Length: 349
Image 1 (cartoon, helix red, strand yellow):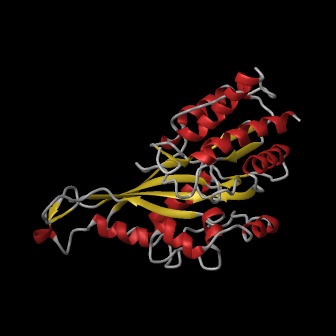
Image 2 (cartoon, rainbow, N blue to C red; image 1 turned 120 degrees about the vertical axis):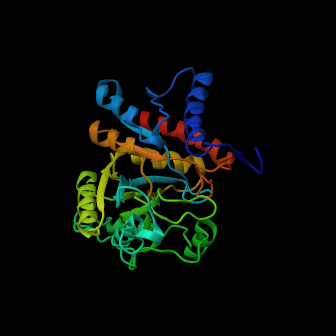
Image 3 (tube, one colour; image 1 turned 45 degrees about the vertical axis):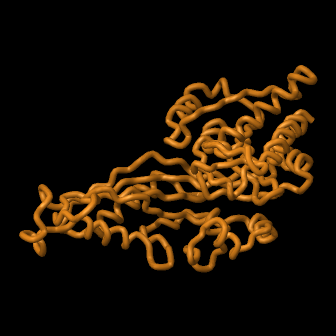
């Protein structure tokens, strides 16, 4: 603990937040001896690696998971002291592009100029996925994209967000990127993305090795928004890659499992109960936001089980999630415990 924060891997994402739920339950049991509502705890540890185990459990044990509402503490505050309820989550689907040229690595002095270079071909493919403004060039990619309701969008304009401070404190780059005509919050919350995560292959050691590699690859993911469908998007992506690939190489697209986007109605009784609970616990009206990330289990709860899902949390934008110095503000941690307790009471009422 340092400077009013708890530093630990997983402090904010997501062990510390789960602990607030357990602490709220314990507080009730140690005082009144019972909870105002029945609570089922479902905790899993594979979310960062795909969550295949929990998806199978939900599919096979839907009868054990019947409930009036579901609380997922895997989001955060919009800003210090500003509690938030997440009404939208982007979906995700991934793929790996494999490009192969010659049967083996070749000497660039002997064969350079006639042998295809998979990295050059891969670069041509990747630059054909988006234009210079960040618009994705896959045919049909935006066909199903649903804009946010005007009322919800108007609420975002009232949020304490400063683009210059965001660029400086959270991004740290010379400038933001993305589609013109959309605010940073819109680009993060309601616009789909296509990102390249890594390009394994070739020679990357110290010194030089003048070969034309036989193989190159790129790992890619796409964040999806309402009403995009993962299977449709990854199929369109694969078709576009094959269509623009140079004829001198062989290309294969390995598709991965995806999760659909989620949009939650702000009018659901559980959402209203959560807003009252967070407002009371933090002493400031809770705001409605969306989140650019994906929490696949939310789509399982909402879609497969039909549960109204409340997605919230107490971490801050500067929590450095997934980093060694990840942290959770202790004041928010304790107010989060009270917020969960008030949520139970609001549901009971």
